[in-house]
Length: 398
Image (cartoon, rainbow, N blue to C red; front, side, top):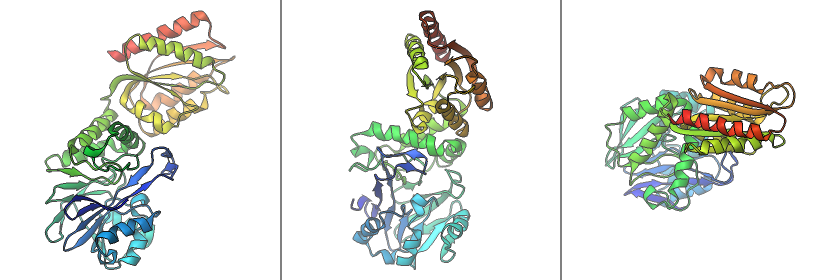
């Protein structure tokens, strides 16, 4: 893609990634892709804000050269040192040796440990400013969104906030880069939530702190380093991030995430009965087969819903491993304080329930009901399963 003007002399100069299968080596983006957004301000002093991943370097540098000689760039602002935003730093230093790298004190440490760069580095502190000529940048310390060195950069004249990973999302740019031009907004909203829960959720208190810190800052455009640029309604993505961050403290939707796994179909048969019971109460439910759905896509539902219904057979005197994997990921993401229920099949001795209780104990999930059955469920057990689902939905609805 060519460079895209955001405001006079302010440009998007990013690249799309439609070839990486796993973001951070963990989270699938094969279908969705992701953008690495970088920005150029062409003033008396020329500044690039965040770089990109090391791939597509020629395409990225060509975008800069469309606008100015890359070797004449004066500053590179490093909001975040993760290599999807810093991978080209060594190349950039070679091509533009005069450019001063700007970041936090922790960024300076990371520049040395990641790239052996120690010279021509300027540390900025919270509230520091940098004059570019007609424009001024102001820097805000926002650590642990989601690494310790992170800062946000604010362009004062056009009131543009460059927050790097904050307010970003998965999804390669599909031609339209601005929120007001986007025809498939629901896709980007869904992928922003998945990105938030996969990448940022563990630092929700920091997100809320940053939102509060910048609440009085007049912002007309939010230009993150992944996903859409928000120029029509920047408060929308801020409010979404606030809503998602507040889920960490229990402000969740009155809905149910039904996660199940089944070896030979017996637990799946019961899952359908349980889901029927839930549906009779009118509580929203999302259903995921843990054997066929990557946990990346399940976590957003678990994060935002009040109730968790778990269906899993006993496997080697323990919980069916694909379902256990989802619960362990929930523990890693500190998805706490849920109403939960469990159902599942066993062949002879059981054991899944004991294992489940051990996994969810540190999460402080309230396991309100359980229903185990032996072998293939019978007609009477299907009726019990439907009632089991209905009762749980009534509890979640309160």
